[in-house]
Image 1 (cartoon, one colour):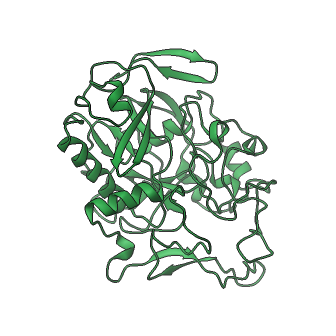
Image 2 (cartoon, one colour):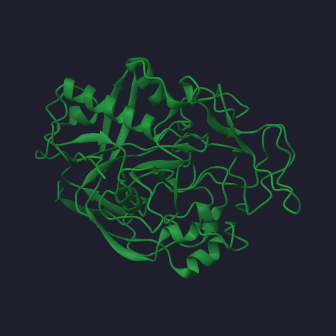
Amino acid sequence: MSLFHWKTATPSGIWPRYLLGCCTLAVVLGLCGPVMSLEKPIKSNALRVDLGQGTTLEMMAIPAGKFMEGSTPAERAWATGIEGGATPGTVRESYEGEARGMEVKDDFWLGRTEVSVGQFRRFVEDSGYISDAEKPGGHTQCFYPEWNGYHLTTTVVHPWKPMPGKSWRDPNFGFPLRDNFPVVCVSWQDGRAFAEWLTKKERAAGRLSMELEYRLPTEAEWAYACRGGNKERTYFWWGNEISDGEGRLNISAVDFLPGRKRIWPLANAPWSDGFPFVSPVDHYGEKGRNGFGLADMCGGVWEVVLDHFDPKGAHEESYFVAKNPQPVCRGGNYFDVPGNARCAVRLGLQGPSYSDSRDGFRLCLGKPKSIKP
């Protein structure tokens, strides 16, 4: 179903002439305006949502379309090789499935960036929400500051461990948290709660019809948006060369951890991105945005999506299970090898309440989705 009419405006991408909704420019700027539905055009591809107290969230219009999901044997061989750095001989690459065509049938909006600390803070202040990690008995996976290396030839020691008392408010980075960092240590349930809060808020204000809702993107929506309109089956949204990613993404690179003299001992991007851990959202500007204008789709933080995990591969339609659901995360993270920041990479979390200081989420605005197995 097409909610926009499109035209080619620049060589760098496709831009909408008409967008979702019975909108006016006032709505795009986050001011008062008529209800968001499915008709009246505006001349912009960005929607700025007012969260209150001077905090806004920018959404980009994404047209329905076809794309290539999964990966080829050659791509998986690169990902598990010297430069890619993912672990060879495991089943993880099989989760991507074989390269195959898929289609997203409905237009939607997607956050230009991952939800930031400041945006999540605004949600918590307005709603009184308590994240899963902050609840009694809760914990979140964080970097272990006493970690002294992998010891790959003896007993492998990983640098993350579950920590009570840590949360999105303090992810144990070892340096001050900033409002423009992507929020981390939030679960699938926390991301859904943020979306439900914003949906209710916008409907109560008369700016959102029942035809649309804020939610997590489906896995197919995320995978399609990640490629930015690129019809080729490439490893990253910009192409196949990790070297062309310099200045585009936050990934394990030649950066030292706080108070340390060593870097990640496995594969690294061969440059410094300036951040030992997470970088601010949209830090790389235009160069870090794909053809749809989306920032940080590769690297940054793992982005939790709406679907449950199927180890056989992603689904074109929303996929949910009744027992032991494992939400899908996509996109790689700031402390991961380059092979894990590809468009096709997908993993399953331990459960709906699991959180990690490498995981965040990105907001979607689209047709409602029922979570029914």
